Every structure is written in C-alpha cells, then in structure tokens.
Image 1 (tube, rainbow, N blue to C red):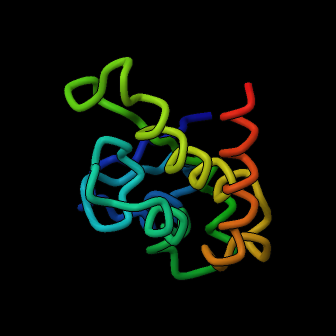
Image 2 (image 1 turned 30 degrees about the vertical axis):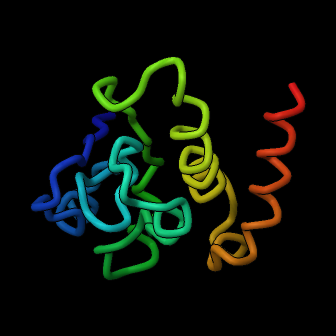
Image 3 (image 1 turned 180 degrees about the vertical axis):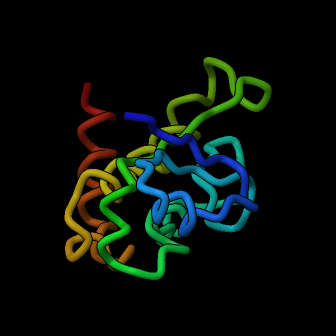
Amino acid sequence: ATVIHVWKSGTDVAKVASLGYDMIRNVGYFPKSWYLDNLDVRWQAVYENDPCEGLPEEELCSKVLGGHGEMWGEKIDGSNVEHVVWPKLAAIAEKLWSKEAYTRDAGDAAARLAYFRWVLLER
C-alpha cells in the first residue's frame, strides 16, 4: 500500500484520503507546527494541532496513520537539545498515540507532561 507523506501546507488532505491513500502528517511552519525548531511555538499550541484537520468526514481520519516532529540541527546543540525537543515531542506523542477524547484539552495534558518532565529529570 502507498503511504503519502504530507508536509506541505497546500496539500489537499481531503483529496488524498478520499482517493484511498493513507498518510503521515506534519505541515510546515505555522502557529501549531510540529516542527520542533519552530522555537516560538509552545507545547500547548503543538498539542492543539489536530492531525485530522482538513478532513471533512470522520471516517477519513482513519487514513491518517500518524505524524512526526522533526528538529533541524541549526538551532540546537548538546547544551539545549533536551529542553528544546522534549516538551513539544512529548505533546506530539500523546496527541498521536492517545484516543482523541483523551487529547482535546492541553490544560488536561499539563499534569501528565509535567510528570513526564520529572521522569526525564530523574534519569
């Protein structure tokens, strides 16, 4: 089966899904971007990014297999990689790997992500 990697904001995701293709999503630099090097975007905004956005019918959401958060190396080094990457990547992971009903509110996620931060600091 063919899987489409949607990474351009101009991609018609509804058409991709309606044609029967599965997809992996992450769309560029915008206020809720999953690009981790978009340093002005906080984890709460990342958490609000809905991987099914742009799909008019709920059943088409099943065509979204997941997404990804990538970090380009120009803005990080060994001194800041942990605190730049993990808050947003944890938010992305919970959003993609949890049931939608569990991930509707970033406020509800704050305690879970604070605990995750504590676990990282303790290692």
